Image 1 (cartoon, rainbow, N blue to C red):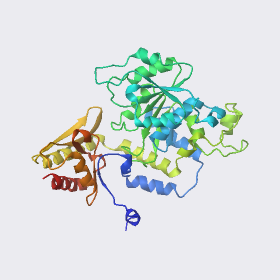
Image 2: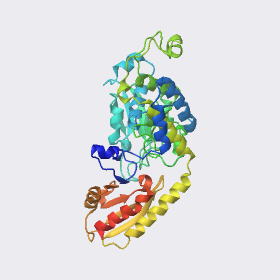
Image 3: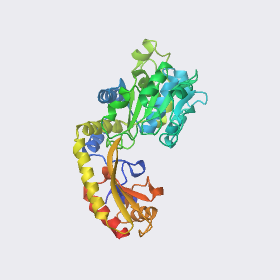
Image 4: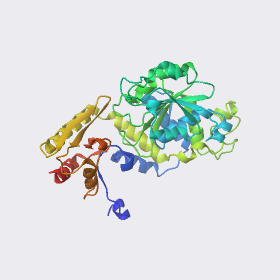
Length: 393
């Protein structure tokens, strides 16, 4: 009996993609083995984070890196670092309703900016969020938003119509001495995005570890400027230390950089375990060494087979689609009035099946359910097709 069966939980066939609500991507055996090995020893967490951060910096082109307990935690800790720096008193006050302002383009507002607001800052919106070609954001609008209370700019790494590009945002922000924090949680693939945002001038970038990379679901890369990553580390680690025996005493106290070690930080609730750190680094090494071109070709071939198997069913229009900026093809199953059910019912019936099957729902309001191959075991392709045909034929 599996661990899930003992809990009375049914495993799901994931045809919906790297979604948190489905547990992200299934980890490779090498990642699980590395995590199990890590669990059998104790280490100094600050040393483990530094060595892992060195690797994250190496592969992203950043000055430093840190493993966080998810991309949302990385954004929160990053903004906290922009607010507090190496000031232990400012760290202690977080979350602080007087922490300052974070500028964001209105087109980049989203449900995940809770991660920014959790620090206590106020979001200041600029620009527009209209349809392409309408209300295009202007550089002067961003320029006008900066003042003495501005602590950071929040930038969403997405193909958002009308938003100012990251390079322009960084240029303006840096002229005002303000760092730019990039939410790149779901920006992989393509693998080139691992270096793209730092190269464009971003000061901090957060990537999910449990999506395309295939690391632990509760992990992420946070990379960027060395002094900001240092603040993240000090607000995230266990700080129940004595000044005379602190392992980082030489760096921060003897050097005069800080008057004393901070107390348990704002990031204590986001702590990450040694197993997740090792698992993420292992998964990232595997991700960078895999043949991404072959993977993409395989996804396209599988999507074509699914589309062909659904072609001709009454009221069904199946098409393989792929965004230019994000090479993950999927099969969009558009259901018309002649179909045996609507898209929502199709999703519900497959989710209630045996085995349960999860379909992509991002276009459900438009009558479309999707089959996404990125987390779908190839051995399950025929199971998904049979379930779809069983409902729709």
